[in-house]
Length: 192
Length: 155
Image (cartoon, rainbow over all chains, first blue to last red; front, top):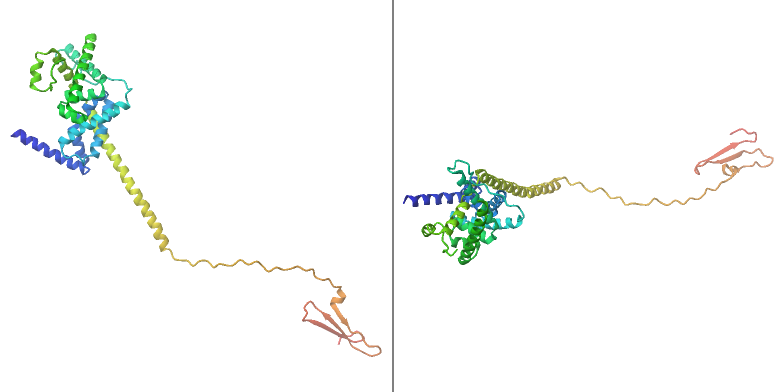
């Protein structure tokens, strides 16, 4: 009951934010961005592999959100709409800046208070290798994998965002997982 | 990889992962991807970028609204100024006329004697007569008549 009440309050607050942002209140827009920034910037960073590019993509996504506030009715719709726009913006940006070199993303520092520094280092190394493997995947497979495995969306939601069928998404994810595993196995065996 | 396509947060997958090495690896890869941390400054930079872009757009839009209004106001002012000005009658038109043509004819040169002295009355023979000398001036209306006697006295 309490959970239901909390959810209802959050929805009401979001609706109020949305309404104020539509009327040109930049503070409300700032709040809306704070609500969705992890989703947008996180997805963009995993899809593009560079912080600078991911920030550009996130900025463009939020600007599009501001332009389309009139069409978005509730927060749940904004969430899926933002995923769709983030993926499209990232794909466009990825095609434009294809030749840029891969750069490791910032992960947790292995020496920062971890009980076992060696284990932490291995963990971080895996993170880097997975990022590299992800970068090597084709665009559709990478997007499907990030949306489902990292963002935790259902296959149906991923299919809606990508504009394809659930069967196709399942197949893309399966292939992507296999490729990523092969990549990490080979890489980690060499380095560890 | 012949395992079913699990949803990673499903309880079935949690159970399956305990026995399947391949899926455990898969789970580790997914966890490594999820663990990516983004510094708060990166979020702030994005928000700041969006807000400043929106404000710049608003300024540009305002300019585009104000510029035509200002132009229209200027045009209206110029038109009103033109209407309110006192009407000055147009300057009279003077038809251009060529000056009359003067044909130059050389003046006839007369000998002095014939010009000044038209006639000289000659006295009759043997009589005391008065001589009248008629002198012409430049003005044709003025004629000087000089009367003298034989002795040369003026009368």
